[in-house]
Image 1 (tube, rainbow, N blue to C red):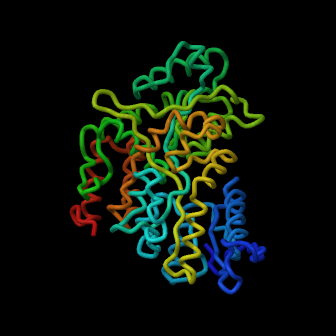
Image 2: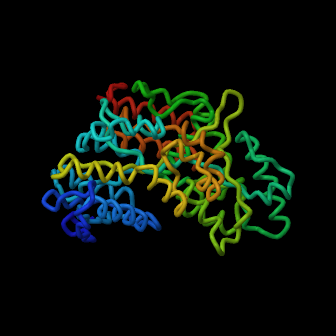
Image 3: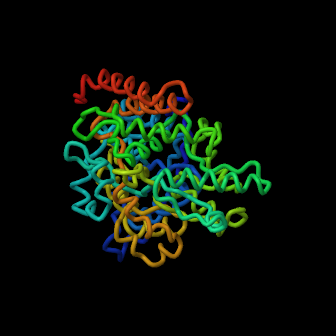
Length: 431
């Protein structure tokens, strides 16, 4: 990666507007230049710039739009480099849901600026962004793992939307075999994210939680991942590989699995909500033939579980204009902006009341139906593990990948994982 000074910076210069006659406009002498990092992936940059532009016109401030690397790992590394140097180059940071715990000591406490507005957002998301009582970021849009399915194929074969993983396995195999017999030799029953990366952590955490196998690290700091229910979850998933899921799924991320599903070659897919708008887009071969549901649960004591994903906006402690930067964050995460993003880009709001908005539900029917999947989503243990989360996740996804690829039994992989996490945490003491 190049040094931060060599990263491209796109500057959008906004002239202070018609200050006379506006009680809300800020005098030119008080105007500040605020830089915000907006993801350059798809519609994200366009929508981010549009909302920030509106805020600049309203306040008279000037903006700089910084486009960080699209790769999340590279973006995190850039942030860590800038923040470690106490750089004021970026005032407002777009941060992944797992980053507040990693970057927390460099982020401004937004609670004094929010003045209670955070209570409008999903409580779980707010808790995820809170550390030692400080609100380190405001939720911007939510993600949770969802089950996408071919509604036409379920109807054709007389199958219901699966409630349990056993139901999914049986329906996936039956429809896969039927479609292959009918001539589509490329058909698979279920595609998901099996590459050894953060996406596998998300998938595997859903499997484990849905089997009542706990979490990677509990909120108390206790490590108990080596248990029979977690082993059953991994055993269930391992049986899919080469059966209802291609062996190549072990190298799939989000876009690889979406590519198979959107080409019409999978019955079920686990993915994030963004896949809905693409599946329903003009020219999609599966347009009008896709449904969305909560992910299945494990048998017996299991429950439906979806890993919490999404993005927030945070303010660097090293900003020269913290009040203006915080004001921009509160504007960008407001109900009006979140509604616009939902209508134009299918971004899931983090404000509960918006899931009763008729316009949003008409554009994205699944949002209202699956509200529970977002409000009760399972958070990764970033808060408790703090700066060591990346190491925790790396150990977890490698253990899971070893199981899926047949290099270890679930019991062997989980036993080694628990030992590694005990060493990493100094026997459960993360701070």
